[in-house]
Structure formats: C-alpha cells, structure tokens
Length: 404
Ligand code: PMP
Image (cartoon, rainbow, N blue to C red):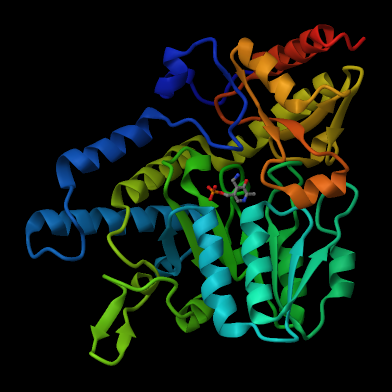
C-alpha cells in the first residue's frame, strides 16, 4: 500500500528520505501548500486586521475572514461565526471549561469526563469542578477503550451539566460514538463537549449533523501550523457565553464603569488574531479536501490494520485498545519489560520516530495498568514500508534487550 500523497509534497520528508515518521498523533508534517500559503500571506497581505483604515489592513481582514469560511466548510459548520479561532485544542477546551464552567456550574452540579481523556480534556474540567464545588465523575471505559455508553446513560442525571469526551483516543485510536454520547447529554439537558484533536485530522466531522454542542481541534495535527486551533459551538450557547479573555477586538463599547461585548466570533477572540495560522489551517483543510477526507480515513485504517497484524504477531508485544478494524491510525503497544523510552531511543537510531510515555493521559494509563506505552501513528504520507520497518526494528530491539 503506497502513501496517499507524494512524499515530495512535504519539504521535511523530502530532505530526509530515510526518516520514518510515525508520530503524527503528536503533530503532523506540513505540506508545501500550507507553508506557501502562510508565506504568501506575510509577503502580500500582511497587516493587523480589523483596525486599519488602509487597503492593506482590509486585505489582511479579508484573508482572515476567508480562512474562517474555508475552515468552517471543512468542519461542516454553516454558521461560520460559530467557529472561534484559538491557539489549539488545549486553548479551546480551557475556553469552554473556564468561561462556561465559571458562569454555569455550582454546588451539587456534576461534570462527567471519560477515563480515556487527554489531560487537556480532563484537568480543565477537574479544576473548574473543584473551583465551583461541583462533582467530578469519571465515566468508565468499555474493554476496547471507548466510553462505556451504557454506563454513561446510567450515570447521568438532572445534576449532570456537562459531558466532555474525546472523538478519538490519542493513546488507543478508539473511536467514540459522538452522536450517541451527545444524545445522552441532551436527554438530561447537559452540555456535550467533544475533544476532536485526534478526530478532525482523520475523518469527516460534519459538525452541524453531529449533535454535539462543542467541538475542539488543533491545526498542527491536521497538516496546519502550530499555535492555531478551533472551538466550534452552537450559537445559542456561544451567545450566552461570557468572554474568556478581555482586551482589544472583543469589545463593543468600553465605558469607565462597564464594557459591552462585540458579536461572535470576535467576543471570544481577544487581541490580535493569528491570521497566518488561520490561513495555514485553511490551506491544510483545502489539501485534505483535495485528497478526500474519506480516503484519508480508509488509508489510515488500512495501514493501522497492517501494523496491528505485523506488530501483534511479534512475541512479547501487547497492543492496547480496540481490534484492528475498529481503530483510527494509532497503535499503542508495550514489548515485554522493555521500557517504551528505551524502545523509542533504539528506533530513533534507525530514524524511526515513535512516541513513548503516558501521552498526556495518566488517568488512562492507570486504567490500562501500565505507566507508559510506545505509540506509532500513521497519516497520509505513510506507506506499508513504514509498517515493515517498524516491525523489523521492534524485532531487532528485542534482540538487543535479549528478549527471546
Ligand atoms: N486532546 C487530544 C486527544 C490530543 O491528542 C491532544 C494533543 N496531543 C490534545 C488534546 C491537545 O492538543 P494541543 O496540544 O494541540 O492543544
């Protein structure tokens, strides 16, 4: 199975032909189209948007608005004012937990997260629950690492105010049923917040049809730049949301005693925006759309299935998470008692990039009964040779560690 896109589209991969990059769940490499779009913005239309009375500033404003439109189309959001540009998923989730939580949570209320959350969708909710005197409940996981929806349905009550969960686990690649969880939340009048950091890069989101109240994602995991992300929300909730940060651009009128807020999306985008980041994300969305996001999803699933078969057939290897056919392009595993960091270092000697550690998911590590795993993750530029190189390198590492 060849790669879905030519390696030559990616400058870093082109100049490092021997590099086997298997860490796209941490961050994806950038196609030239994204780098060129950002550069072109800086070279042709760069100025501070929204403020200037001159044509160049108007062009920067127009680029920012066009980027919002393109990204909204990619995420399946008709009302593009409901797409807020942020610094990334962490920023998006802190925005919603902080702004919504502070205004809406009180003693006796309940916040539910799943046991498979990245710290970015766990700690902000835990902390706002502590601050507001709300109960913080962790929804159990099914054996495959997905949220146990039956347990969740039994857990919720009228006290439940929010359910925060991932679209796809960054450790296990397990894919949650977003509409099902959103509907459980709706049945008790709770808000549903989906962490899409590992969903949006790999499958169609279709926000308007998803049923969830909020969806967060990071540009850098979907071929776009670091420092940019989105928070997409339902207008009714966004309209009632108090500002997350205050300052320039987000105001309507500043009086000596009180201030009124700008309309969406500006109310939630204080300060000079990251226009180049938005332009880069829009270019990444266009690139993914040109390939076809469904083709991206099936390419990764095919590769991960191959990797699952190759790696799990090696003696002493334990692959965590769902069956080969049920996962997004992520494979977490341990090899006997070889520490994942040692394994990753040995693989690095062969220019294979994998991640090792707790993957910012310590609550999940506890539930898996491990302190760390090795993780290989696949994207559009990976092919079956990468899978074979990984498998052979694990076998060689076993020999180094005298693991028969
Ligand atoms: N959630 C998940 C599931 C993730 O994989 C990540 C990134 N590892 C994040 C949230 C945080 O994303 P960022 O660091 O881009 O804010």
